[in-house]
Length: 427
Image 1: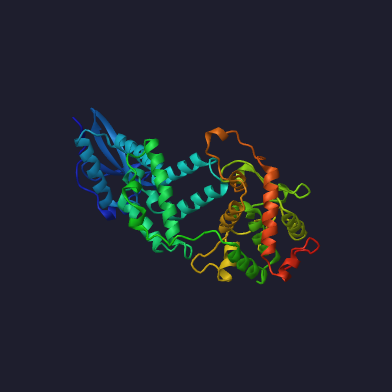
Image 2 (image 1 turned 90 degrees about the horizontal axis):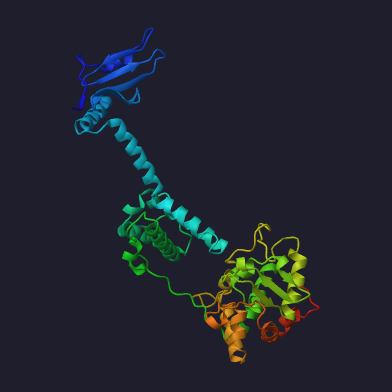
């Protein structure tokens, strides 16, 4: 039979506990029902519980005095005696509880988030990975992240996403709260799918709620293509604006190359062969994870040669104005359109340059294959699985030169003079 030991009374008092000291050997002061205070020669005091389990005399360390006072020690001893009566060894129970706590810690939502981030590392662009980690650290780690992943339900996710969308967490960047909320919801959906796949969860609470339930979606930004009249208005407004030489060059290159904003601002000088009028963007920086060749028009080459006189000391073609060890910020060009009043209802932003070029090229009867290749759109036709970065390069050179000439033709005479090859880039 498993029973706690029952030493004789009298019970200890708080005063006697506080004054207890050992002599030449340890001092054992009994309280009641197996609880006693063990005082060492060095002066430390520990609460111990004597009990019998499986026919053997055993002891359990309740805790140290004065961190645990007499009343607290009696309460803990009572709980442990209840375990003994139920046939559970308190020491084994504690070991099991510690193991469970460790397992729970390894199965928290945040631990799964970290495992998911590690799992995805290398399968997406570095910038995407950094963004995902930043968002999860900012909004999940110190809140829901502390809970076991299996205990996080749809209501908890709804509250988090809704609070982000409404700007209630205090961590949202101005104007981007709804977009951020949708991004966090999407990431959590992938995290829970990963948790299910690794056996740490059985349900995905994100799929139990619609995005629109928690987030009032922002009005879709309009990246529509501009016709040539609209493009001329925009280009001349930009030419007349007070801009830094680097920002002005960035906007010009955005139109002349039709690359994505991230591909442009992350450009390094080592990627350019100006003598060969070719820009080679490595696969690691491309959305489709394939190397991309961008033929450069005469205007683009001239612009880059002049720009190198300004930024050639930096690794970046378009360095950050405050720190040339970093490239230009993602919003720098979009902010130009906002300042000039061309973005009142997201009328135009940087990514629209690609659609503008695409519309012009297709209307000018250039091959849609050339246009799609220039835009680095991934080929989905199984017949074209063999990737060739240089496909249709001569044809695309002709197309991009025609496009650059068209862009120049839209500029007012005084602005056209600035684009003459003999004229260096000016502010």
